[in-house]
Length: 277
View 1 (cartoon, rainbow, N blue to C red):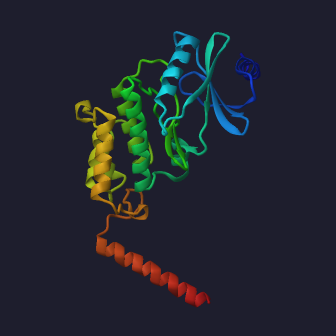
View 2 (cartoon, rainbow, N blue to C red):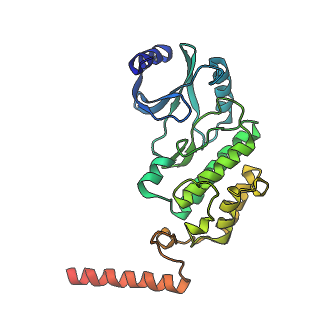
View 3 (cartoon, helix red, strand yellow):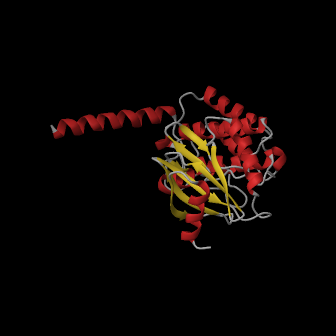
């Protein structure tokens, strides 16, 4: 089936003012398209036929269950349709970059932003798990960094995901938020990427990707509790420009050193203003 033919069939099945744009990369064999509906961005996914992909009926049932979750950090799935035996889903695309796009542009997130994003994602998963739902597709392309925080798109179309799967995926995303990329093979300790972090945060992220699964958190609420403890013990988190990393970034500095650096920067700025004037 050609792209143009598939676009036409999708529009016929969905109807309304849906406009389908370029095809996007998809790791699972589905067809994904950027789209618009009125002034809003959308994402159209056409899944492989069952049994590889979901049946239209199964997708519709799963979407109804996800809509009932209604959480601020979850993108509510939209319309479903059948296109030549394929299940098709239209979902709103939040304004903002996906985590993959953000990491490609500027590498790891500043510590406060990373903690805030991780809390949003853990809260979204906790909301799903309380309703006996799983996300099943949590990854860098499913996380959107918006002005109102991190939100999680996607639906567990297969319905075979587990809480353990979600938490393992959350660990991968958490590592990427602070290290700048997903862990490859046996993960290096986070301190090899970001040294100047609270030790509790190092411990949490390392435990989430520990090769020994028994050491990982078993509930999203555990992750939330650990993050809240980090914020309570370290209300003044280290600024991102002082984060230590292996690739030429600054090493950890004492509080006195950081204050002296800040004062020197202020004096230098004042001198430059005086000279320029």
